[in-house]
Length: 474
Image (cartoon, rainbow, N blue to C red; front, side, top):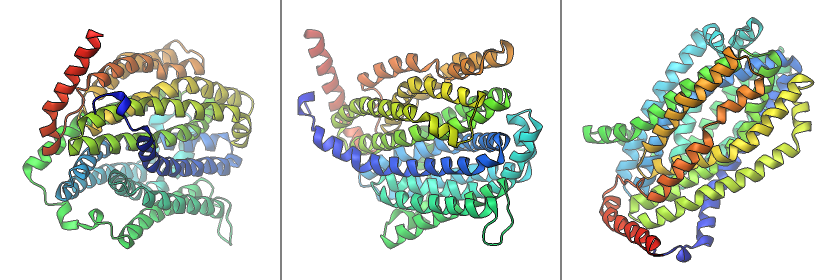
């Protein structure tokens, strides 16, 4: 590829659609299920909605604990898939799955054995603590199943088999919605279980999700999930390379997850109306992140496979365009969500002060989300190409030197209004966007792990140097 004019936009958009749309639909289904959960719990009161919302923040911390392995795994899955290295895919999946299940065991143990302690970390409201503890004692059984499904889904997506996770999500969401109705309110002669019923429905839905993925993959004779022996045939160099590339991602997710936990502790010590509004907002935020996840997977696969196969110029040109496409789509979705906010917030049991806070949060987020998702897309692109360090360092530095101090000071010391505290969560995004863009155009984030990609690296660097010289001359 010698110039931007030779870039095949039609093929590019088609490939994005093939990967991004099923993933976005899958996440949209999951978020829709979460919205239905919130609506079905809403009659139990704002306190219950807030308690379940804080439990979701504990789940998000678990997400941060295992997502570093997901990001590292997808780096290897995509590049080995581009290089047609089946053994590399099998080996990387085995390492990834093992690490993720260790995280699942830790969080399941905390939820099942120490739920009261978990809730005390997130809020000082005793009524919310009691409800949340009852929820965690049941939903903890879902964590290993959810993480197993995530590991299988990431492998399938990275190898361009995106429909299986989509169909599994459809089955899971329908199961969750139906069993919520059955268990929460006591249908078919069963006792009304309230918040524990919602948790039990989540466990059953997680089992359905994992089961459908496994069965459909077997029926379609998908190879990589069933090479059980090969999954654990690790060599010391392979594990060392995996951990070297994953370590920055793991550090990023754990440190950012810890910082977000502290932020949620600050937010969880505001008014009960603010806590309820935050719980609803997190559900709606899932709509935005759901669409973003499609671009994230598209970035990882479309860029990672090119890097793995040695098509480095194509990877570079694709990455630049993915960022702006992501920002444009997220902007449209944010406007649509803002336009229909009133019926959504009302159905989710927000009124009066909690409604006002919820609407204010959506207004702030509709500005911040576009920049945030562009930053995340760039970081996912860097990771899939082998650079797991740059985005990690920037995110951690700004989180601990800017975001976290401002949130803690505004919430605990200055006693600022809740929306001011909330806005402080995003104050670093514009600065990071500028820095991430500079790194994007430098091309230094392309760091292949396959022999094919490494062999093409000198030619790519020469191509980049020639382009830079031409720009200076012009």
